[in-house]
Image (cartoon, one colour):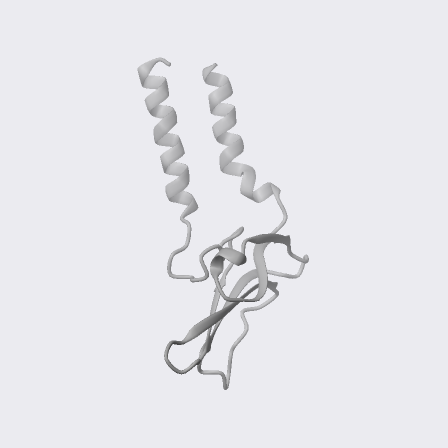
Length: 123
């Protein structure tokens, strides 16, 4: 049983490297909840990109969100209202910003701590 759990942990930690690069994709949506389609990226794509474009409606500004795969991080010259967020991890553009990225190291440490607890408690 313990050998199975160790093998499962090893597989979980290595799983990201075995898959092709994927990003969330959408075009011109008004909410991030509509931008949860997962797409396989092309071989040359290295980044997941999110573009938040502000649409000024007078009283309250709204956003249009687009997500895509890209071989490079685009620059939005001349469009001051648009914000571009790029990241280079599997499905890292889930929330639309690069300031809150999933830390794979922290996830791995949490899984490892759970397995250590299981082994010590004899379950």
